[in-house]
Each structure stands twice: as structure tokens, then as C-alpha cells.
Image (cartoon, rainbow, N blue to C red; front, side, top):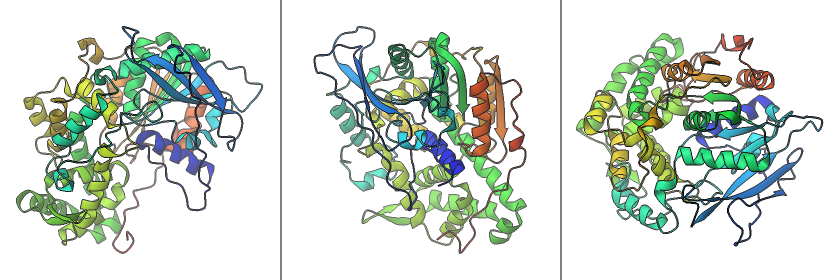
Length: 493
């Protein structure tokens, strides 16, 4: 696997936590963490060598924090982290590079080998990879419980409430769910930074991780050297409620691009009409599909959620998938819907932490009028955000001070990347973030979606972090971007 391919894989992992291992690649090493003594107080930490297969020195560690940081009594959490020491032994840099992943609820230590290997940022600085509380190897809050209503309950409702309540009841036995927020995570990180004796951090975040960066900038400004924000949205924005509108814009742009593309327009001569036909069919006469041996109806919500996933990462397949659906082949979309929505009950996912954050930070300020206004006329409608609103009626979550949603002001050097066709964090949102970052540069990448990787990103962010400044950065490598390589009939099987 080439270095640019690894860089792209690392960025994809940051945003989506779905590392893909090539068939000719050996399995990656697995991080192994020390065990802290049961009677050790909060503030205790330990590291040990790990993943010796990787280049240089790599250490895995645990650090104990109070679950309730304010009272500082009661239950504790052993955070898991990985440190990849700088490859240059003569490096005197005392600041580390740390990562904030998408989600919320994505582990960083589990895919850590993919982030560490062939990472040019590591040459002169340590990499610090921390699983936040309730995530990954830091006492994950996974909703690994059965669906009481079976697979049929997953159609017509993205988050079946009986499953959510079962998850809540199971997790509440070992966690206080309203103590899992972005702000608390950032305070955990700051405590770990001080314990590790790093003078400052270089923050690298994607998607939801850019919200965490903004929170860290506000709460611990003296601990920030630089910040890279990939696919950023304003902390003052509406979060998930804005996704339906952004996804609709991305689909409309994709249809327009297909009409301008000779090969795509020849294969799909009236893609706009095909889209309209498919959407009308699921609204008025939802087709029957098979799910785990059961016959169910595939409605507009399920189609919308499937399209959401495709527009994230597989937009080039959308014309083919919708054309097949129009011809009666609905099963591929149904299978993809089940696969995409399955994260909620996966044993290695962190749905508990996800819901605690989303309920406190995204849904708390919404009402039925806002949801209706923001989703009207979109293919996704209120299927997703309405599902979250239902979850939050039964899910314990923090009540935040209104100051949480105020724009974050900072003069720390900040580099922002956006894709011009990002369906959920459009470039306009990053413009709003950058407006309050007085020492920032925002790069919009043509025809890119939610997540941008490759050598161009690599060389720009390397120059930025090495210099600690946005002044003089050469972004010309993004000026020429190839058109979308649409998947055509006969090539997508």
C-alpha cells in the first residue's frame, strides 16, 4: 500500500472509523493496555511498550479520571491512550499532535496502527491517540442488546424506542449518562496532557471532532499550538437538524454534475426524473424487501438514510443504485440501510456516548417547529432528527449552559478544510467557524465530500504544523481536481 493511500485511509478512519485492510496486507497489530491497580486514586497513570511491529517507539497507557469531574468522588474511568514517539530522536519539540474523530463516539485507539504508520506528522512530534470516556477502550458505552421487536422494528423508525430503553437501562447500571459531553471530554484530555508533560497540543479533528476542537480552544486556549479542522461545522449551528438540507443540496449537485458528464448522462439520461420516481414510489407504495429472512416495507425514511450514507462516501454509486431501484431492484439499498443503521447495536460501537452528546448538544435546543422547517422538502425529511428527538425524551443527558453554543473565539493558528460537495458540513459552516478564528485559513476542495485525504492534504497540513502558521501555505495542489468517476451499468457489481 502506497504512502498516499495510507494517508487517505487514515483520514477516512478519522471521520468514519471504518478502516479497510487490503487483501495483501498483514493484519494490523493490536494495542494492549496496562491495568491500573484497583485502589489507585484518580490521577494515576501508567504506560507500557506496545505494537512493536510499528516503526519507532509506541506506548499504550491508562489514566484514571473521575466520572464526575465536579464532585471528584465516586466512580472512576480508566482512559486508554496510545503514544507514538517522534521518529527523529534529536527532536526537541515538547508539543504533541492529538486526534479528534467523527461520530460522536468513534474510537481512536482501535484503528491507531493505521494512523501511526507512514504518518509524516510523526517525524518531529509525538502522536497522542486518546479514547474519550465511554468510547473504544475507555469503558465503551455500547448498546449491545437485542432489538425487542426484532429486525422488523428497524423499519419505519431509525431508533426503535424499546431498544433504546433497553440500552439505557443496561448502561445506567455502570455509568451516569449525563456525565458524557464534549466539554468533559476536553477537560479529561487537558488533565492527561498535563500528566504527560506536553507543553501544548496540535489538534487534528474531523467532522464532530471539529466541535471538540472548538470546545478545547475555548476551555484550554493556553494548551493549543495549532488546530486542523477537517469538515467543520459551527458549535453554534443546529447539528444534526441541518443534515437533511445539506444532503438534499448534495444530491441536487450530484444530479447536475451527472447531466454535465458525458458518460454519466449517456448511462442515466434523465437522472433527475429517476430520483423523483424512486422517491415517489417509496412515499406512496413502499416496495417489499427482505431483512434477515423477514419481509418488510422499504419506505422513504429507510431510502433517505441509505442515500445519506452513499452521499457521505460513495456518491459515484448513487445514479446506478437509484436506476436499479427504479427498475425494481430495491434489495441493495435495503441491505445498505441495514448495514449503515446497525452501528446502534454493534458490540464494538459506542452508541451510549453518542446519544448522551447528541441529546445534550444538538437536540436540546430543538422543537417540532424547528425540525419541520429545517427538513421540509428534503428526501431525508425528519426521519433521522425526529428519531434522535424521540431518543432524547428517554435518554439521560446533561443540561448545558447557553454559553456552550456561543461562537468560539481564538487566535490560535487554525487550518480548515472543506469539501465543496460535503452533504453534512458544507463549506459555509466552516466559513462561519473561521470568522471567529482570527489566525485561520479555510481551504475549500472542489468536488470533495465529507472527508478529504491524499498527498495534497498531507503536504499542506505538514507545512502548517511544522511552521505553526497559516502564512505562506501553498494550496495550489487543489486547483485541479478530476471529475467524479461515476459507476456505470456493468461496472458496479
